[in-house]
Image (cartoon, rainbow, N blue to C red; front, side, top):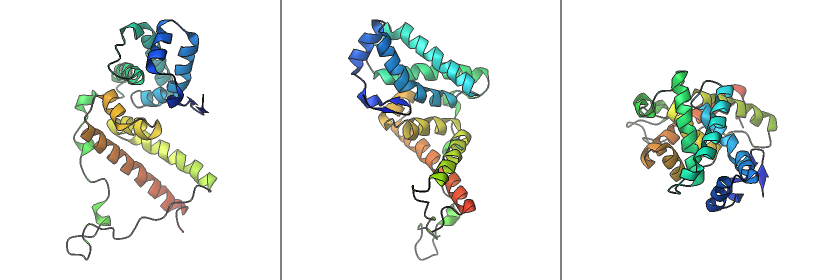
Length: 223
């Protein structure tokens, strides 16, 4: 089985039917396998709902306990991973409401989904030669060979993710950090494909702005 720093590669896990059978039989190897493969991603998702790392760890622990206790009720109408994430998010929402970290998902709309994702002044206006085109192309970012720069950039990305509006942070964490498909994210969060696209686009734009500012100030992106 292939592994990464976050544990086994999810695609290398056995089929859901085998995993469910193992969990229902109380197989420790099956549980350990899923714990290693999915816990890092579950922890990142939980952090989008609760106030601190300790609270997120508590949410993940509660979620795994709920998975073990509820596995006999799993009907297979979604993937096992989606089902586990739904359990986690329900628990995380409850914790988040208690510490005022987050609001109900249905109440989060409006300003978060409105407005331009890029400063309109960066594009040519209707009276200029190429309306809607860049006035000046964005600076080239540094190459991957610059390891120090990319370590610093990762800190900037993490801070940008932490500052995102709640829904955007959850979507970009699932899509771009954990690598889940748009279909999985829509299923996990029970949102439409259009809504998912808007949230992801805005989140990516916000993170890019932070990186652009960092590279501009540090001079790392200048060629």
